[in-house]
Image 1 (cartoon, rainbow, N blue to C red):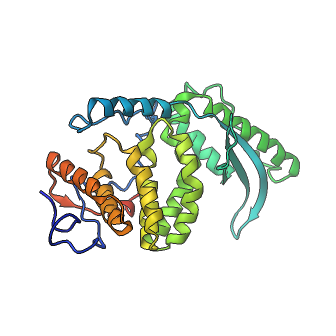
Image 2: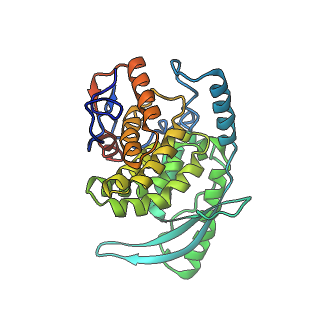
Image 3: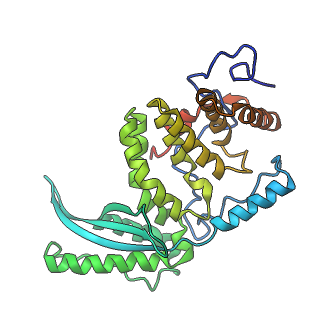
Length: 316
């Protein structure tokens, strides 16, 4: 049944300001769709098409061909480009600047992020809980009681931390783990989603534009992992009255949700895209039809908008 709130229905006069999508469950407040920590918690968990998807045989073949391309390992290089000493009222620490570059081709989207030694320490402790055997030969640079802020020690630690990240990345199950991906992306994503919740959409977009390319590289074999961030970009652009940019972000998210109409973001995203397509004079009819077909196959009883989903991410 077509909703009276959407284009294509006689009583519909324009796009709604709210996404009236229906979904079976509310979004958990846990961050993106990564598996839980552990040796099996790397990003292979999101399998193929849902059992009741409506794709034709040819479409399924194309889907798996594209998935296979995405599974190609993206090789990343880690550098500790610089370090600086920060002094606060009750603490003093060294902040290390990490640069992440994709090797084998020119990378116009190199990632630049900052982490403290204590952040590396937390990563090591988290990995030891679940990958103790896998990382038993990986040496973590230990903390010294004295001399941590000398130039010589900082230079030595920069080299050691670079080697540490490279060794971790070389281990397949570790580089695909939630712990490793979170270390490199979660602080920035948490800040971005916090800005979204506060209505600071421009600031949220500034952060997302920088972190999403890195998240895509780290989860290249699991395309759905980046969907929440892409949907957050859609919401920010839309609320800043930039429908074209919002639609572009939505298209990227929909591409990653092919054959996964059971995913919690699928229906709310389609609903938002229908309204955006109508505003932009794009083909909203096919999107509307896809939305209606999905709702018929997967009847739901609770409505939640795309924005309501997004603001629940990265609360912890």
